[in-house]
Image 1 (tube, rainbow, N blue to C red):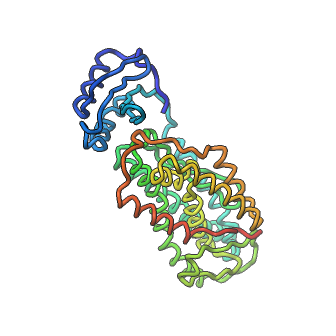
Image 2: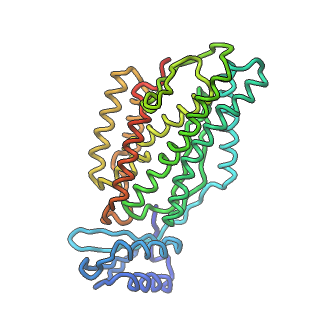
Image 3: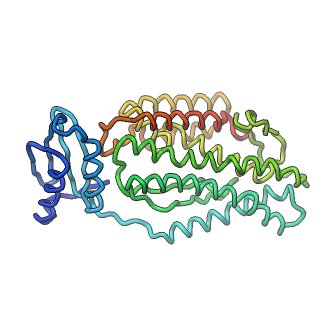
Length: 356
């Protein structure tokens, strides 16, 4: 989040910041400059620094200030002024969702034409068996991020769905975090919430799709591609590999693929947040390894999608921005959450998802 100079603030606001900091944290010196207030403290004087800093953050951020910690030669808490930012109105979310709905129904109707007897029926099936389940899975994924962010007092936007004119009708969805992430634990929990909710929402649709497809025999074979199913299908005995693929089976497959892609510990992906929370600054080393891995499997399996994703990660940057408090410890629960996401990735990942 960008900052502006303290010189533009009234002295009363600055006094309020000083009072709030001193109420939470024991400091021994203050340095004032046009850009920031810097408070010097000793760890020994603040045994509950993690808790106190988070309490302070919840008060200062809504007021338009950003606190963050730096531990170097001396331990300091720095408070800057957040630059006012203008966000898109909620109607943009609605418009993008409507466009994505139209696109996914269109492509869903094409896949459903293999299981229907009329154009009207194809459109209906395209909505019921493809667009509806797919957008619900993607929406629940983003809702997971949104709810956990709100629980941690981090402001977030409603989901932005991304319409896409080819093959699936969508390129996924995302939410925008409008507050900085407070600490490493929050990075893990916010980052993991979406994939966990998305993965769990795929499970009932997985069994429902497997059940329904037996009642809709194929009437055609207009298949533009075939898909490879992740290991979870084999584990559950649901991997048929038949073509054409029933639309709801395809929608669930997309849900699992989106989960796997988001869990890659790369850049600003969900897995990148989790890796940064668990590993701290060392996560960029893992990022370089993932880029190499993606290039390798992209070449080995002749699947350029992974090479494109590696390039995306490089462009976005492999050094993940730190949270406001980069020194708080990860607890056992968050380590378990990270381990669960690794298991989800292994169950959802496919080296060559699409066969042209």
